[in-house]
Length: 147
Image (cartoon, rainbow, N blue to C red; front, top):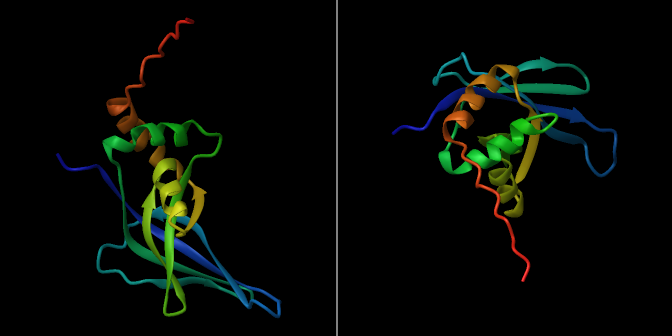
């Protein structure tokens, strides 16, 4: 069976810094539904003296049954997140992978990858919730007997 997927584009933001050690800072600004298609290329969507935002289309959020516990934890949190792993390529940060799994994001960070968390778009809630409802089966609580 194929895994459920959802097309997303990632917005990366460069913030100019007035600092003698570092001239700029990059971070993930957000994710949006990708309506641009597989052939679309990254492009600047906003620019002023201090900020540049670049849209990176062509990413896919994939849900896996073995991560359903982590999806449930994420959606149960006060502010659910999308985690974006990104790497610098030729001086520009480029998104590499996306997840809504706390566990997968933690494994990426344990591997010294750069991971930013952004708010989960509201349109993804029903899609992920339906997946959780179908596949999440919490372990029954075990009663410990004192010996």
